[in-house]
Length: 301
Image (cartoon, rainbow, N blue to C red):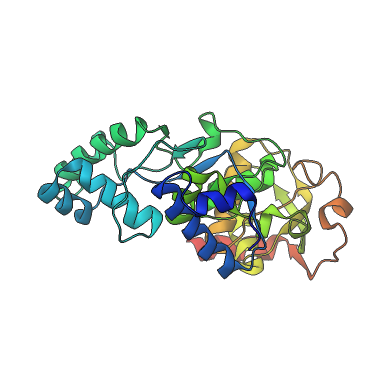
């Protein structure tokens, strides 16, 4: 991969060992993906506070802080070397938690893990991580703008980020988001590139899609067929609000691998069907009618 001078300096250790280990991970990751370079990001959504029996065992032997340093090194930097976790370099959010105090009693042996999670919240919060504790960060203040490069986890958040907000992210993991938080970098590939964001499948909607169940059904149906493609919907679709768009995207990313969709006249990169497909032609045109709706309904039941 081609690195800038500042990226080379980080890789050489100019910003300390944590950033150096993070850059080493991003280099391996980017080369595996075939990325030619990195791109700047100032919006990272990952997970660093989640407790585990492994972290708890280390904490009992060496202390909580050591356990959290070791856990981040192993799980977020893929490093056998224990690195002292520094303050994050860019805006970083903690997404889902393992559990909350109101559900602790439902989890076997959870009291110690719950206490460790609370300690981790403080540990990473003091290092600049925003403890959002949700898989829908855009509902609690993290709303990137169109064209902004992000590094987000969570399939339902990623599809909303790409489709509804027009920001750019691939579905990242604990390691890549951990590395991005310390460097402000992520490999430039996939949905970061404009040419990869055009539609692949046209979906002709022939039955009304109005309420939440309708949006979930069509999401599950379309996702299962297009898998990791980019569906473009047109037809009998009511004007959706946030929750319906969220529901459709979550369903499509669950039954398939959808990370982006277009609804002409609704989503920001699709003022028209033509704009949604750009230079491409649909690889397939799907019909979503009474029969298809019934199939989706029966499969889900």
